[in-house]
Length: 127
Image (cartoon, rainbow, N blue to C red; front, side, top):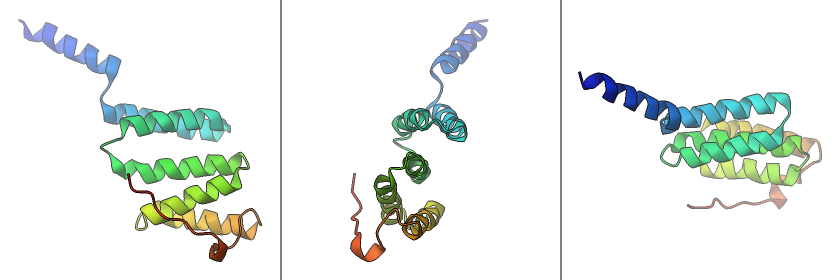
């Protein structure tokens, strides 16, 4: 008989607070939706929420950085976007996002928004 109230309480706590993974996925989905609408301010806010809820889930960090770089690029902050892409390539060299970042960086270079690689160097930051 006590099981029902305890289960209801547990479900209500989970629905209010949510588990970290659900929260992270929710904010990441919101970031993609905001990006589709062209609202980069909302994207940056949602990505900050993803980062706060993904401290133990490092696999999502390259994806978050990639989306951040794309928003910076959309806002015409090309140098910041290029540095974000270089960070991805240096920090996560074997991820699919490193390949995407390299392609975005080459596109920025070919459009004249960022200097050639020989003049730009980056060192990964250790956290």
